[in-house]
Image (cartoon, rainbow, N blue to C red; front, side, top):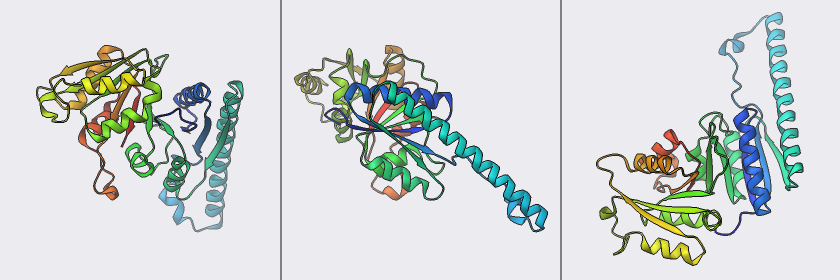
Length: 285
């Protein structure tokens, strides 16, 4: 995403936070002239009581069938409403778009397939996040390799990306995150590269953080470099604390690439970010 993204995928849901998420994704698509894909999981959260499987008599079976039909009808109606709202939103902004419902079966695989040809994914946090029941934020990040913008459901900020903080440690993952966020960094009003415990980062160079500031400066972004000591606290908590106190409206971080993708594990700092995230986070792997 070092250039403006041209395909953005947002995972939708029927909640108020889902509508706000769709609106923010549409605003990004308008800003960058991107095509917006709205993915909606039709039967998310729908489970049937195990006792349904034990219905034997004709009346009981008929009751089960009627119940399932009511549930399916309700889900179909909600899908129609979400789709119409999404299409109307994009039409108002003159944004190229398409609505893609995900039906039952292999929902996680469908979510990944719908993500692979995107430049940016947008989800919520915590639930409802728009993802299938069997899909997590870290899993779709690792499976798709697409930069992930996670917007807290209770985020009330008017902007995303005007005041950016970068969690910088000169790692390949942080470098990838910076590259993926470049279109946001060069347009931001302020960018801060925060280096936590610089003495432990051997690739930072003589003047801590100056290299990344110069690199981004050549792209047109003005970057201030700050240092912080963790003093035994998890680094992610230090970054989050600084982001909140500085009034940042976007945090850019890189996740550690797991050697065993089957385990779908991220480094502990990333886990903390996904658990306690108070501001929007753009995360890359």
